[in-house]
Amino acid sequence: MRPHDEDPFDPAPEAPEPPHDGECCESNCGEQCVWTRYNAARAEFERQFAAWRARHPADGRFP
Image (tube, rainbow, N blue to C red; front, top):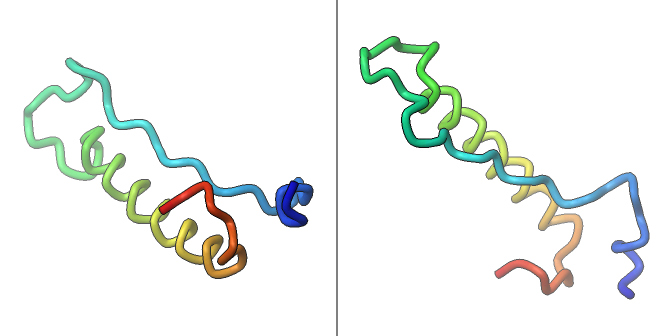
């Protein structure tokens, strides 16, 4: 086990789940759209994941 795997205070962030089929009403509802919210959450995840990878460069779980 790698030392940083033992740190419960700095786990890898988890990617958000995309909307399920049928969740989008396809009415161009702007900021309320499930895809708009998902894309914002995905961008935040990618930012957090990049920061986490910088703290854990030797972690081989992710490419």
